[in-house]
Structure formats: C-alpha cells, structure tokens
Length: 197
Length: 81
Image 1 (cartoon, rainbow over the protein chains, first blue to last red):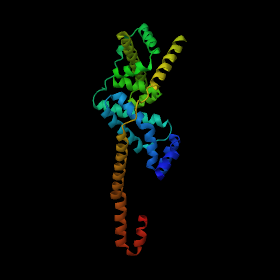
Image 2 (image 1 turned 60 degrees about the vertical axis):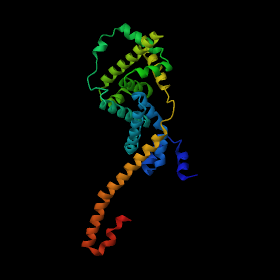
Image 3 (image 1 turned 135 degrees about the vertical axis):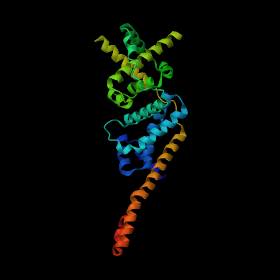
Image 4 (image 1 turned 120 degrees about the horizontal axis):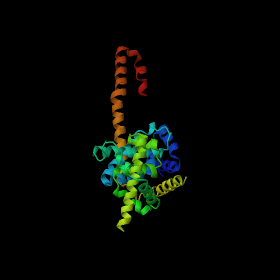
C-alpha cells in the first residue's frame, strides 16, 4: 500500500484540530485531503442551497476550499474548524451575491415589522412550530438567497448573533432584525403552501 | 413564561429541521482535482517568487561577496546546502 494511503487511513479518524496541527508541522498534502473529504460536500451543498446554480456552486466551493487551505496556518482554534470553514463559505457567497447585485447594501426594510400585529406574529410562530423537513426543502427554494443564508447560519450551523454579524458585516441588532424578517418570510411561505393544498 | 417556552419550542423545531437538511449526494468528483491543482499551482508560483526574490538576492549577495573576497567563497555558499 502506498505510504500516502497509509497516512490517510491513519489520520482519518483524528479530530480536525490535530490534523491542522500536523499540517502546520509537516505541511503534508494527504492531510489536506482528509479535511477536503470532511468538508467539501457540505461546502458545495451550502453554496448550491444559497445560489441554486450548480456551476456557480462548484466555482464557489472551489474558491472556498482553496481559501481554507491557503489560510489554514492562520486558524488558531478559538472556534470550531467547521464554523471557520462555513463562515468562509457564507462570506464567499455574500461577496458573489453582492457582485451580482442580488444583495443590495440598502438599509433594512424595518418598517415592514412596524405593521405586523402581535396576533400576526403569534400566528406565524404557530405555523413555524409545525414545520416539517419535506416542507422546509421546498420553502428554502422559494426564499431569497440572503434569507436562506441567515437561516442556515443560525439554525443549521449554530452561528451566534455575533458570528453572523461578522460574516454579514452588519450590527448584531441588524442580525436579530434580519433573522426575524427571514423567519417571518418562511412562516408566510409555509402558510401560503398550506393554503395551496 | 409561556412565550419563552413557545419561542424555545420553535427554535428547537427549526434547528431540528434545518439540521435534517443533509446533502443528497457528494460534491462533483472533478472539484477535488481542481482544488488540489490550484493549490499546487499557487505553491509552485510561491516557490518561483521565492526563488527570484529571497533566494536570488541571497545568491547575488553571495556572488558579489565571492568576487570581493575570493578566499571566503565556500562559506558564502553555505546557505545553499
């Protein structure tokens, strides 16, 4: 068996942090491959989920993985490696969307919330309580990329408000506002979906 | 109190559903090759830049030293070993 293959098998079960430490010490390519195998699929599907175009998702996943590997020496281990990788992923998607002008720099449309009554909010909360996985897959396709992204960051990857704020380059209070807006949109879409049946 | 409980319930349900969204397939196979080709190319470019900046200037200095002080030529090229 080739030495590289043996090394790959031997290190495959090590936690991320130990692999990164070894990469910093030895700079071995086969160790990068272990990290690639762990994260590339998730990164690709995150990009695909946000952008819905396979070629763009592939290009962005490529850029994310290259960026991760080129900057791996800078990873200090103060957060989970997965959080670091996904924050680079979301950042790359944000940059792409901004370049395509699908996410304008305009301030939040906060006035929308001023007209939402307490009853409406309660109703939307009730709707979200019964959300099912099969419905969520369809609903995410109907949401705008920036709404999808913030919901994925919070509920799939457990990003804190502070972490989301850093990725999106907005304030923490703006994150809370946007999260609420995206949740409301999700509830609204779910309500419409149930009405369609 | 009831509100807080409800909010927690909604959050837990949302987390459960979002975490259930798993990739249906692997990333495209060609992606791995493309990523590592880029890494190799960038690393090669880094080596070339290094050769023409750090190593070249060292060689140049060593060469000039050798011309100026021919007796110390062996020592001047020590860094190449």
